Image (cartoon, helix red, strand yellow):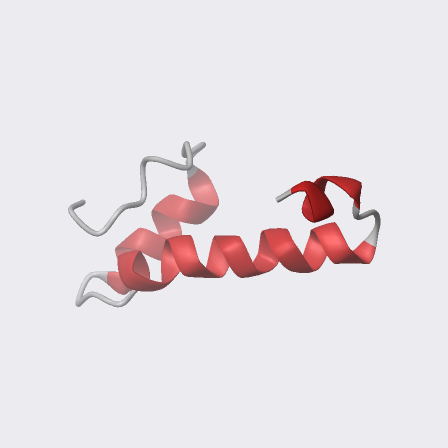
Length: 54
């Protein structure tokens, strides 16, 4: 974790993209994917909002 705090530039971008992918992967692999993508793009969601139970 300390190494990620010291990282700058592209390293943090890659880390955040990977973490975002992990967070959204199971949430978006449902039959109502289109509605969830629309919600993701149009609403302000907190990181805790898109979880598999939703």
